[in-house]
Every structure is written in C-alpha cells, then in structure tokens.
Image (tube, rainbow, N blue to C red; front, side, top):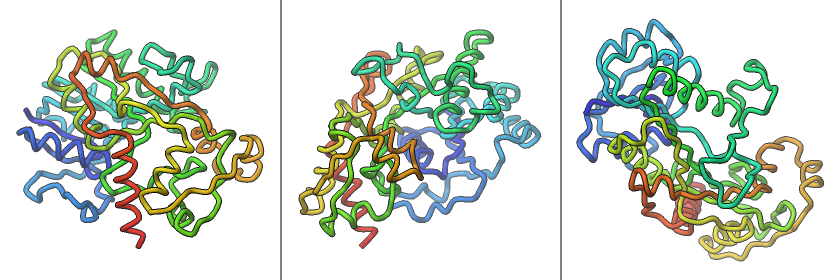
Length: 317
C-alpha cells in the first residue's frame, strides 16, 4: 500500500517509516526539511522518496495530496494538518496520528484504559488558551478526528504512547521529569538525585520500535478505525526503581533524596509540568490494543530503559 508519513524524519516518524518499509509498504517521507537524518544508527534508505512540505499550508497540501495515498500517518498532528488531510486526501483508506497517554492524568483508576476521560483540555479552556500546549493540544487533535469519524466516517485511528524510550536518539527521562544532559553524568558522579514525594509514582515506558509497530498493526486491522489505543510496554515501574535501573546500567548505585512535590516545585520552578508528570501515576492497560490489533510488545520495560541509558551514556562519553 502507498503511505506517507508526516514527521518522517523525526524520532517517532523515522521508526514508523522503517517498520512500514520492512513490511513492503510504498512509503514517502514528508517533513519541513529542518532535521538531519544522519544521526540515526539505522537510517532510512536513501532510495526512499522524501518531500518537503508545510502540512499546515492548505495550498501545499492540496498539491501534495492530489497524489493518492491510501495511508497517511502524522507523528505530530495539528488542527490545521488534520483539516488539510480531511479536505484534500482523495482515496484515503486510513489516517493515523500520534497522541499521548499524558492527557489522562490524573488517572481515575489504575491501570487506566481508553474509557477514561482524556483530561488534556480542561473544562472551560478555550482554543486560544490551549492549542499546541502539551497534552491540551493533543486532546483537541484527538477530539477533532473522532468527531470527523463520527460525522463523516473519516477513517482515523489515534495512537496514545506512554513515555517513549529506545532507538538511541533521545536522552532518558530524568528524576525531575525532563531529559537533561547532566542526568546520567550526575549518576556517574555519585550525586544525590531529588525525587518527588516517596518515589513510588508509577512510570510505564514504550520502546519507539514497539510504538512504530503498533501503527502498522492498526493499519492491518480495519476495526481500529474510529478507535484510540494506549500503547505501552506491559507493566509500570515505581520512579525510584526506574532511577535505580539507570544507575545499575552504569555500574552505580543511585543516591536519592525524597522531597515533597510542593518543595521541589519551589526549588525548580523552571519545569512544573515535568515535575508533576513524574510525581503522577502513569500506568495503563494495553488489553484493548492486544485484543483488537494484536499488539504484543517485544521489549520489557527493563530492557527499554536499560537500552536508552546504555546508548545515551555511550554518546555522552
């Protein structure tokens, strides 16, 4: 089948492209042309077609999508890009985009599933206040494609990953909810890491290659149209265990200081969203994806976390 992947030079899009190619899809990589692909250890073959396009530009998208693509995947959707796909993608059989499980927080139950309310957009928030702002922007995009499906039969599927790991392109999540370069060096140096509350908040990762595979599985199972899927590995770990595992990969023991979240927010006002994220349970059921699209993760959480720490430590020297 003929597919186009918007954001195909980015971290997630890159691995979606590689997975589709492996299974014989005719893939076009679409991007704004601003990212260097050469840093990937497993690059997309040079023979794969690339196009440079601003997916928010109606005229550019109208011209591009005059060419019929059966499958359209967007790794970082926007309201404008969804509108353009809906208006101009003749012959479309399946549209899929990448969202996030973050919009469920705070979780109403554990493990959380797709029946929970997606809190990305708070009640009363206006479009101007929230669009493009983290999970609120994702909630608007998810809601838009769901409404287009309900009203017009727009063939959309939403994939909601947990914390993404693996592939060697990104730094690991740190103890304060960011991806700072000093995180692994701090562990190597034996520095004490501040941890919110008791360090027992749950964290559930997804390996980027398992995430990429879930998009193909959704394409190959037509019942996925009109649905949303949480895509994670098969269990969550307490934050303190996650940090200990990163240290173990480096041959170290982690030193932790447990600090009430409110105090940490006072100490580190620069990233309240990240801090609140690592202090909140993120634990999800993947039963729906297992049942409906045959998703079974190939990595364990421990393997994914260890791989990320090992590759990033090697890159940082």
